[in-house]
Image (cartoon, rainbow, N blue to C red; front, side, top):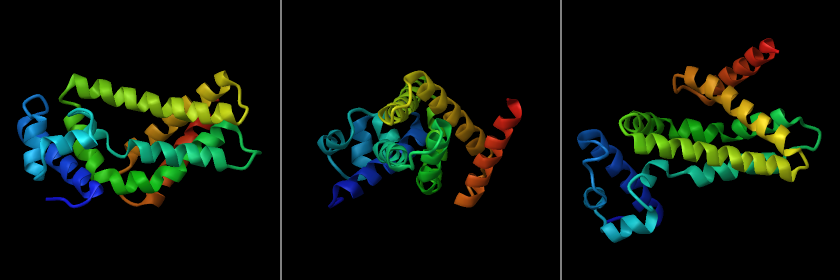
Length: 184
């Protein structure tokens, strides 16, 4: 039985990924996930609100790193540079989380409920970045544009990434930034 909350969360996530892969998302219950992780169902619900949330563990850390990067950045950066800097600050998280993200992506494709949750989580991250930009005095409309363009640039780079090193991902993001410049 896991002795720490962090260990329980990891075991629950791994159990969910395994079971969703084996049986499918809809056919798996939280009780089965808990049993596979060797914890009680009550422990499951101490960590995750529902059976979808187990797939989105780590979202708070990602948001904190990205918002923190915007908050602590030098004053003279453009809104888009701030957003791109926040993605750069999160590259270590993306690299470390890649194996789970790949498994998770396959499962999300099988369920409209999971696709909806993934879109909601992505939108919440974008809103957090917008809020951090607005807190720096950037007009909301400009902040929205910068956050969405930054997300598109990151998506372009990360889709081309083969899961290699952080510098590989950073280079692909830089390539996407250069591609963006050619569009204007």
